[in-house]
Image (cartoon, rainbow, N blue to C red; front, side, top):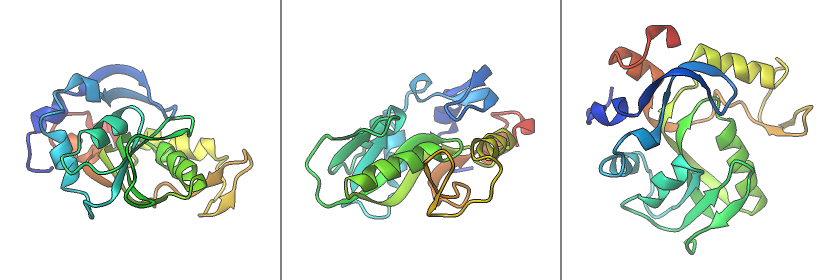
Length: 191
């Protein structure tokens, strides 16, 4: 568990029966809007940034807000879930750090990276607050979405999408599900 105010994260945990953006079901979710994130979270996200001179690209809505509030804010892009790219401030270069609040399967990050690539923009780093990819329910959804076929970077899937193995995708995160389980914030059966 990272050594910062865990109450910031715990305030955002909601329990119930949720369908996540990935399509998986969960008894809990982390909701950026449920915690007072503006005070601390952007600063902690910035500790993961490898090069502060690189533009930020935020995936709507959570990643967009985190990118916008960054203390070392540079150029800014917003990517919708539909893959539309909006440039919000002039870019220093054609490289970006891609930011999202939660990564469940990695599909939103992959879709955003494809959309940016179509505009000649290279993703040099990926960052999120919470990485849920280690959860069983997320692995099952990812297998079903891609017809249980083996995949590798650069393979065109049956559905016409360009696929990369999201389990191997390097994403820097403040937390993983196992961190929240270890702190007693979410049920152990999550893993």
